[in-house]
Image (cartoon, rainbow, N blue to C red):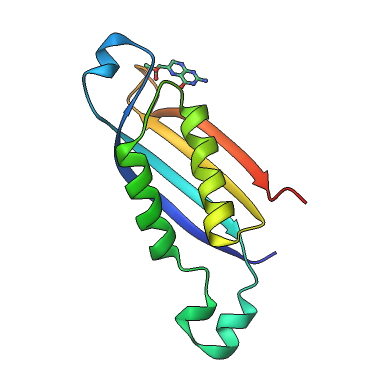
Length: 118
Ligand SMILES: Nc1nc2c(c(=O)[nH]1)N=C([C@H](O)[C@@H](O)CO)CN2
């Protein structure tokens, strides 16, 4: 399967379950792989035929910046649904990392894979 990806997209958000996390904004890192048949844009050389990674990035930045959740699981799920619903993606793998949230770990977070419901 061909893919379009976005790697290490940094977005500030209000996220976390602890009191101190409710008072600050933290930088999240998003890695996203999306299934897409890249042969069509390769043949046409037309951006309109692509799964436009810039458009997806802008939408996720807009959404995550205004979000307010306790768990990264919740935010990851919402982001996945937006990509599936608004960009016609049938399959994706999304990794949402919280760098520095746990002392001694470079990052913590979740990886989810989702498919469009048939
Ligand atoms: N599976 C999860 N575990 C934890 C989460 C989370 O969102 N999902 N969140 C926290 C805290 O907010 C943490 O990031 C603060 O250090 C703890 N565990």
